[in-house]
Length: 420
Image 1 (cartoon, rainbow, N blue to C red):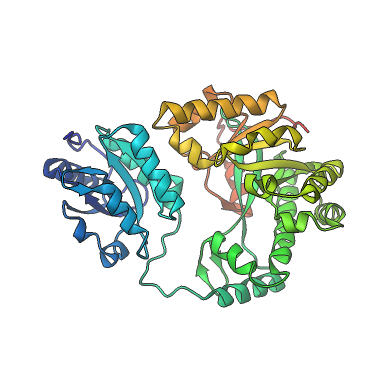
Image 2: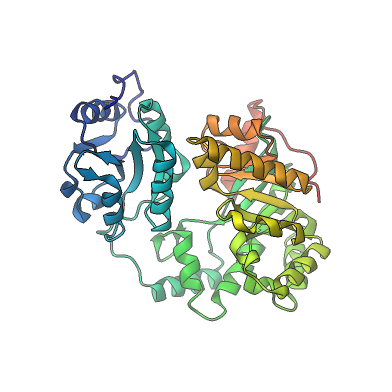
């Protein structure tokens, strides 16, 4: 079995410190890797016994390093068992098997709602692991199983109160050109800390809001207004770029939706042409003619329309020709997968080329490392969004960051006008 390299001179405490559990049958590999990670400041335990990976141990673990290929132990079975317990840990799959095998196992884990942080093919440079641990996905909040989660009704009530009180946390993640990192706009995203709830994932907020009639619609309109005000604020600070907003299909297909959205953004100080509405592949491809009519209406009203999460399902790509969209957003999972396999890199490059052939702007999400940035830049992507530029920030922090870059003489500039 390949062994991790001897611990180099890594600055202790780099990034956020993690509690790491290594499950691998190779004792020398485990010990070397544990020594390396401990030297970097992390808390590490390791074992070759899969029965040590219990729901209780996972509650005290941030990241599980799982070897898929252990003599006498099927790592895929271990992965399958993780679906049956409340899992707080994120998982990094490591294996000397074929890269296609480890990527297939990772995708199966994601489909089972296991938090797959990434994959590493043996032998690997332990520095790659530190990059994964310090990446955007690893920085996401970790909810421990021992903490009492609020009920769906409690979350919905908190969302209602936040809308009424004007305290819905809306944050912004910049999109920049991959070459000179020029500012090209930003996506408005729900924050992770809510009044009355504390730290909670945006997906849990959306799910809860969808259980109460009209609440998700009100939340979406609140985000539209807050996002448009944010876009107006950064324009006043000298940053010229559109604001992107995730949109629900139910709201978009309402009879007066285009007029309502236009009124909302104009009242906040922006024109519809300064706003890009983002919809997912599934929302559009599985929709009716009403959805296509709605897309045509919002485009005629001046809004841009982005197809989000492109790459999660390739079967719908043939329908791109009939969609009045202006932007393709490559899904983070495909960007991550392109680190490890030639097949994934080829698919990513083909999507970027297809988007350009259709006259669309192409944005790569989840660009977390300089290597990711170099890869998508070489493939010709127009804009990047992800940890390598910035995590999502509150509006004041967002504007302050770009002002600081400008004052320090950094290469970050303001990109040219967006194409319609």
